[in-house]
Length: 262
Image 1 (cartoon, rainbow, N blue to C red):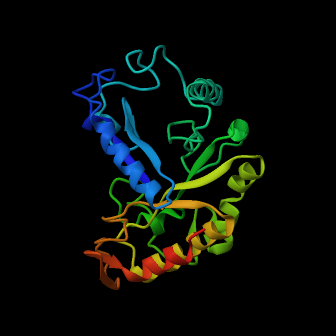
Image 2 (cartoon, rainbow, N blue to C red; image 1 turned 30 degrees about the horizontal axis):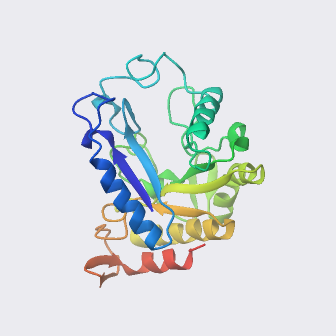
């Protein structure tokens, strides 16, 4: 169960060092609910002080450059990640939380690529499940490539020099499996399909994607639960809905998720 968080809910303005600690009671509640159900909880700092993958223009400071956000200006690199990891291990030796895949910045690898140089830290590496983007992000206005992307098709969509099908997906995740073979656990922290993709295409792609995760033994978190990418009230035309527990659930997607449990 992935819990995305936004620091603006517990910090007044940009007073990073003066959080309202009452919010931690909510996190404790999520953790207790997950433990009760035998679920792993991934607490995701989706918008951390001075950085987010979306709408970073809302931030006053730059996490990588500004001294108010860091004690000194730094560039994100494996050495710094190792230093942060060592410091965290001293505080909590049993925690297996680990580095997310790289952020997309000029000159950096995109978020969906593996980090073999950090395979030996003994932490979980968190990947993404959105390729090919013309399938998962069809008409997604916040994705810079949406205007020029070809229409969704699966299997058979040609994108970034490959024709995408189950075998292509398997090859795409080969670097992640190599990281896993080197000692790192892998979790797909975010995956899903925007509701503008035709339903039959979305289900074929998600079936292959989640089927591979099950084969690999990887847990994964659908982005999101309720909403444009979710399993509840996503609004994708042609979906077969069913009322379950008071929610309008995509029955076919639910069946794929249930079949893909590890």
